Length: 306
Image 1 (cartoon, one colour):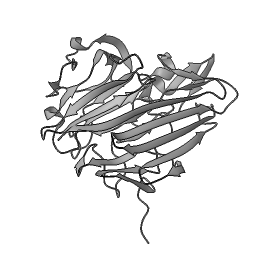
Image 2: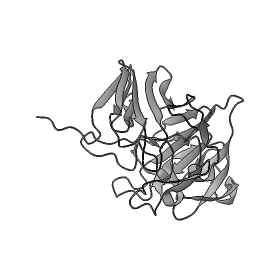
Image 3: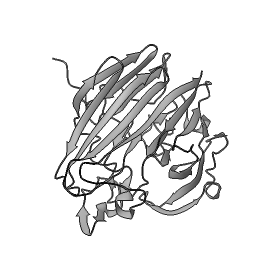
Image 4: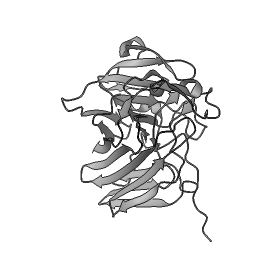
């Protein structure tokens, strides 16, 4: 009898020359190819998800300092993530099974409900819709407060770009960010600086080279509606655009330096976040949903050349 993959049921999406695989556990993106070439650096079906690749991050992205925060006068204690310096990392849903809500050949919607979680007692319904379109892959995050009191929420995603065919050093990045957060040893933001102060100015396309990044970028240049774009070009001539809409306001970049040998500096994690690391504790750009209130956040990928 076939063994169930570590990430659960695999949902294949197809539209023309585009193919994607979404997984049951975490509702994440395991693979996405276009014209036979990898757009994201995924992982084999028979292996567990490495380095949060393709994960959906909710109800917070990044880390919560000391796994403790105060919301509306009440202190809450989250379960610390092992090996993360006492912080709680990347929310509560990236390893849970999500329910299939709707599916056709090119789209899928999955859902999961939170209620009475340790350190996060707020009832919250989450949905994730992945859609292949003629213009690329579109990811739509949904969150709805199903409780009777206000609920703190932040959303994010964790795709690795570059296809895993080369090295981070050789990727050319263009990111319209004016600021970057200086992080401490536990990746908690301590200071917001101009991007050139840390040598992370990618407003004009620049090769990543030997830079080591696990940093959150902000003050993103967008249009009046909050729509912004960044590009990652690989040595083979393939340029991938990641776009986002409000309420995404931050991009976290990670050059894969702490991953094992097989994935060490192989691809660039480009993470759209609605709020920075530690938002549950700092309150910075934290979404607070009233009872019954819902929020949607969209981002996507398209191949521009190659």
